Length: 95
Image (cartoon, one colour):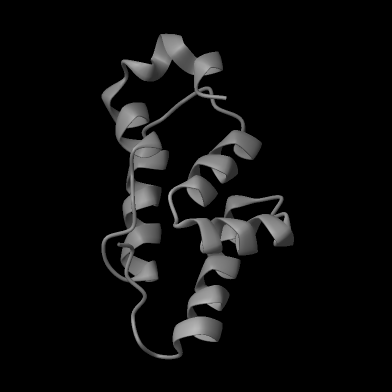
C-alpha cells in the first residue's frame, strides 16, 4: 500500500502517519492519529484503517484485523474495546 502512495510519502504528515506508533494510552494514540489523519489527503478510508491497525504490536494488529473494521470510528472503538478487555482500566502501552 505504501508503495502506491510513494508520491505523497514525502508529505510530512503522511510520513508521520505511517510511522506513528502507540506510546501512551489508547485514547492518546487515537488522538495523535486523528491529528495527523485530518492533514492527509487523497487516501481512501480503507487504507487509513490499515495504517491505523498497523501501528500496533502484532497481537493487537491481529485482533483488530479479525474484527475487519470498515470505518475508522469502528477501528477506534474496537481498539478501545481491546484495551478494556486485555488491560481493564490500566493504560496499554506499546513497547
